[in-house]
Length: 609
Image 1: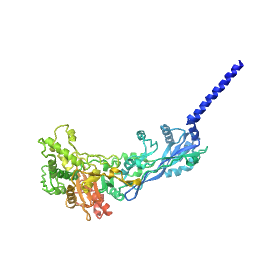
Image 2: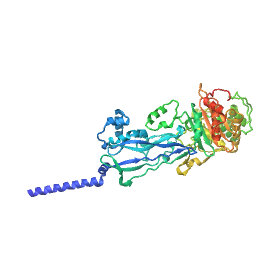
Image 3: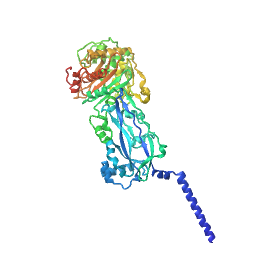
Image 4: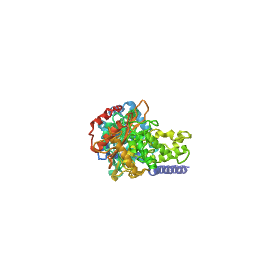
């Protein structure tokens, strides 16, 4: 009997030993959770954030750089004897804010009491200097250095964009696994478009610490560490002096200035007014500042050069003229009487040829030109004849880059609108339509819509005698020192290059003896330009518009200017465009009275200055 009990007892001991052996095998070999928990008592994993790429202007002047900031992480299992009152005093928080911060931290998907978790971010140098002597009094809390964006100038904000912490929705949408909660990401402008180039690659360091949580050094002399890789630097085509001058001229106005180098498509200036100081969207006050800026009724975040869509007005007459020449419905010598019973006009002129019609911006002339383009008598039905003519017209006009995004290296570019037969079918609900229903597109009104970047590109296309490079703001990326391949390709219009000489003749006449002579003409260089006055909603003044390029031979700059609610194009827009040309070519203006006229902003004054 006793012998049987002894055997049972021995069997139980053996079974128990086997169970413990199996459990130990699982703990030590198959399940590393316990090993990680043990290691976490001695080893802390710290992310090393990469330095974001710098951004400079075309002459090497620094625009965007990085400045140190710090974030506070917490390893919750190490937090002992936490003095919340003192913590609040040191970090400048209320008890309610402290509780809310703990609650938000624990609600994060990646939260674990056994690994460091972000607690506070965007601590400045000043913040860090204030708290660093107290950190050893708060076990479990660690400060990590990182960088944030800083700006040498308040200029170019709408083009540069801003960087902020990746949102929950962005993190869920991103499938690359590159980003983690708390990472910064470009949210608009260059920062967003070139995010992949600018962001760099994060690294990681493993640190040893003692039982008091004090860092003792690297694990195995850094054998397991990986270094962060800095982002690539960007060189923009922006001339910072020209950009600053453009923003100076646009102060207190709504509108845009776009300047392009025709030979490359590089953007020299991209001014949106009103704008904001990009430094406001950095640091711990980002959220509150963003709310203020985004709720501003003047819409400073609205990037007008790329997003505002206007009727082109009379500047569109140049495109109409070249399309008519290509279609063979007129010649440069074609004269058409200025019959104001058909459509209203302005100025003293009559029976002009094509160059004169452009120089004097004759509405009846281009009304008749469009009629000839759309009604060529290819079929007997006037409705179908207009339809055929409009399709051909649309093909030529869109070859200039109108009616669709050009593909600039910035987000949110709008397309504008060039009407097609399909468009009018929808607009008229499939009822018949013909020339008499749509003739206002002849003078850049009606359904036509353009974006300021498209009009600057159009001026560059005329300067180049029929081709353009897609406008781009970055001219060199990293060590390659080249823009993206798509910005090195030429795009040709459907218009013969010979007709662009006629357009340049007419645009030169606009400035020397036509509607732009009072404020756009320069003494030492031939400027080719065209004024435009874009219809607006009464009682507001019309929008003032001007496009130009200079010099005529070997053009170095093409410009478009839109000034909202400023009246005739020969006033505000022509003045600003000529000042920008002067600044770029000569370093400053020799016409201080024009500069003062622009700064005063009294554009409703009909008297030439």
